Image (cartoon, rainbow, N blue to C red; front, top):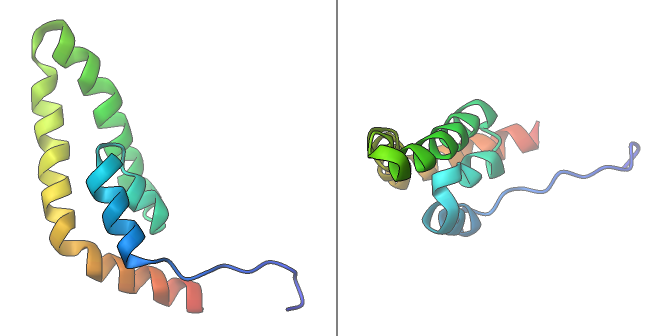
Length: 89
């Protein structure tokens, strides 16, 4: 290795664990290199949690994040394959 850095291939099991444990914050997307959507998950959760406690309006944002997490349960294998191809290049 000439440049001294190595990027390892992501692990699908770790991605699923991140989704199930702390997926509200987009950690599984950060792990797979999908930074823009991960930031959306993060900010939506950070903004919605206090709004939920202050008056309930934050439930809409958390519902959107929860819906995204449910979609990611099914999309994660595809996201994983794309992340692996990106590492191989």
